[in-house]
Figure 1 (cartoon, rainbow, N blue to C red):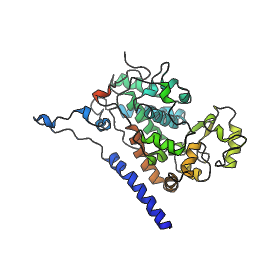
Figure 2: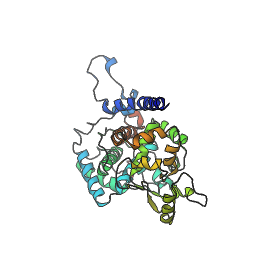
Figure 3: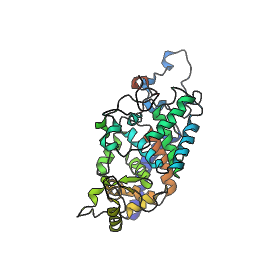
Figure 4: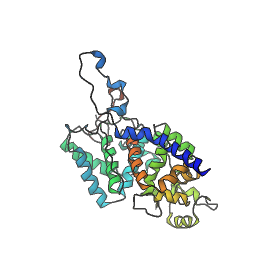
Length: 342
């Protein structure tokens, strides 16, 4: 029986992971062959938007772009290490609404940034800083969406996580609506709802479990899990952790480490915590209590190399969500990440 269970798990895992490993290591980089025949001309509007991304996108127009982003991120995180998880979260919130188009950075009345669910987002100042440096070096060239994608990768590295190559070429969006930001998961959803949310963005349940592993670092505001701490506390929450968290949550906006064991280390302890009822958010704990996703939690808890390699793959997939690269996508390169171009 155990052998059959293991066989099922491995078959399921391989069937989900294989296509995306291939996608991650074999990006479309070749150019259409030159020919006088009209049939050989590829209309970019007919290609998947993510197919037009390339790791060499700025090689000629702004060859120092990645190095500049990397240096500025290192400087900021050296000053404040909590910015690493904050930037990763900001990138997720951006991609979760209208795709990875920097719409979360737009700062106007009724924008995603003004939504109640965005109140605890951080990293805007740091992205603006990077953008200002790049504008001096390469005016009107590097998009805010690309900056945020690269910054999230570098934040992961500085937190002790894996490296991956970021494909570039995203354009910035012109629309940002607060009501759409409220649809981003806030920590109370069930696993079925989370899977549906991810699938709508081209991500699967493996991506859900792996990207949730970013909670190995970072903190959460108490209001996101306060419903678990009442007079009748959530029985899936470890009693010792419950008592500790109750003392820390002075207000709804008090901050508590998402990983109670190794909060400053990018590792697999997050998954081990879930197996011991130490998931802070109910959405995290349900990944283990739900039999659909629990096998992935168990596998990742004991295989750090698997977690890191798949985290890189899933972050590439996240960064490709509904990107604006084609003419018909009507994106732009913002001069200021806070506002659409005049």
